[in-house]
Length: 380
Image (cartoon, rainbow, N blue to C red; front, top):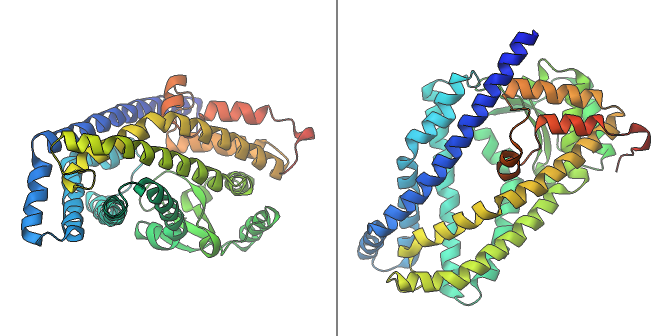
């Protein structure tokens, strides 16, 4: 790629980043607007009352149908935004290779998955509000932990294959080196898989996915092309660094603590809010928009804190990758290529990075990797 091509790619990345930031704000406003209209226009009350009439007062069925209707309605309301953000914009910048039909099929599968997860999560939440009105938030926190661990375990075997093809990697030499890396990190994996990204996207990625018997290394076919073996191993070593440092456990602990705080605060305010709104109490499904808005607001306020912690863990994983390979050049090369290929803005505004980014900018990561003193670095 010529310097002029690189400069043009960097310009596109800044533009792409700016558009995504605007879309993020728009989605926040649309979400708040949808919840407000659903609540204040009486849509939630009428939906709950109609379902109670037709379901004979059996609240689990009423709640389930309400949740499915509300989530589907929100998806329909935001469909134009999703189409533009996930399909039109990606095609505009040459990142998507999907036809509209292919994208729509993936969208439908994602929506069905979202409906199923929302049904389970909120059915359990409202059951706890019914059965344990004083201590529901404690049980909800425990359920959140189990729910999160369960999703992490089944994702690579049940969820991810819904959208991409996975097959054992047909490269014995690379598989051997990758497996050796994992073993030295003290991790047991079920295999190394080729992640079929190229059919749908021009972006590259790799991951260490799953838990226990479902843990596997997945390498995007878009990464396997155009990257040296050492660069691929550097990306993988970074992912292994997260596992070696128990970052999944760390983030689960942080997430569980925040979930406990969110549910605890919700316990303090939801009952008063629903009574003030004329509902029978916190367990009244008609107050669903209020519950969702409170959780939505909490996640928005705490997002910068979670992102700050996540960025720290990314730096640590980069250091592990450098120590594992004994050189910083492969990781720097991989990061620079990924930034160009995935249209990552190398130097976003500091306040944007602080608020919205779970990963440090490429420029800051490369600078940090360059500053690592190899003579004093050990794998840990």
